[in-house]
Image (cartoon, rainbow, N blue to C red):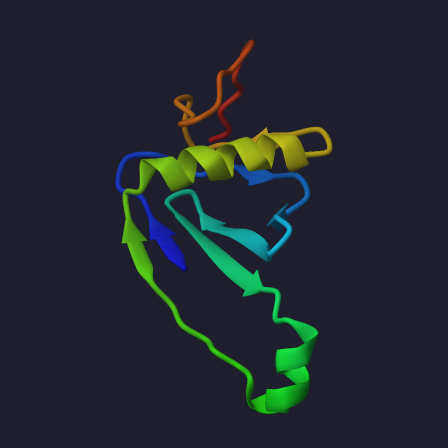
Length: 107
């Protein structure tokens, strides 16, 4: 999935790619630039179905989402949790994250 934002900025972690895992899915997020993130969703396929369908059991699809603030807020929260030390932002306003202190915005 590709997520584009007109007004809000996506964070970039010091770890680069971030993961959000659940019992049934693995989601990998990549920040392409401050206004665009990509999310790759990997569904777990039951072992029995893998055996039945073999290598033919592949389904790839994509979607484009514009200005989905809920996704951006969630992504930014995941970035803060995943960071070892620092997150980077193109804006002083960070959707979904409460900033507790000074923000240094690089030029």
